[in-house]
Length: 263
Ligand code: BTN
Image (cartoon, rainbow, N blue to C red):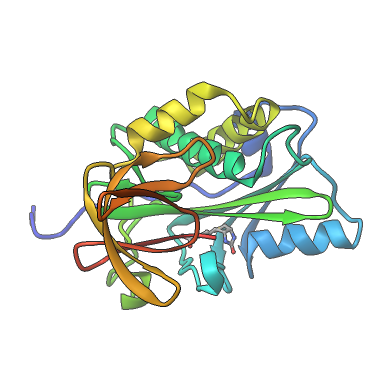
């Protein structure tokens, strides 16, 4: 056996019946596609045209125009899992609650389905080791909230393109239907109690910037601060020149390449 050749686990094809079984929530519309432009965009369009309504789940095997935060592209080749769900607006929970509970849901689902250990990089990038394996894009629309999640299941042949930054993949056997179903189930259930203090506490435990020095920009200037933790409304608490500040937007950099933004 040539030990230099990495064995790549195959990704199981998405299938609406299997996905619905794993989801286990009978009232949710479920759809799978081999390829779409962007699952978030499909739900947005579908809701706008009155073709779909919450609760709804769409999962795809690749995206031709995957969207990341801040207008960035989200590289979405085959070998990944791309899903979006449409839910009614959470009662009593602001946008930050959706962000926090979605990040926790993705971590929990990956850890249930694989032997991997996950961590969160503020605001909602999911890491395994020092690689980003999943990103989340939550968007408000008139009909409710869309939460879009990309999970890199397998490293593509030839690796991720440079624009994918520090992307990595799970690279362990993982059933795409099972993972998508569990992630969506945890988010739908979480949205029923968006202010559950257990979520904030788990988010804080998993968020690995606490205690690290970060750089960020504010009003066009670059600053450095020591991360003290996460505020109840999802901001990043930093100490700068002895003063506490809560970052809600802006760029946070650790070392030379870990970059995150809160929209
Ligand atoms: C980020 O890391 O910047 C967020 C990435 C979110 C990507 C997911 S993939 C499924 C859904 N459809 C999209 O076009 N984007 C989200």
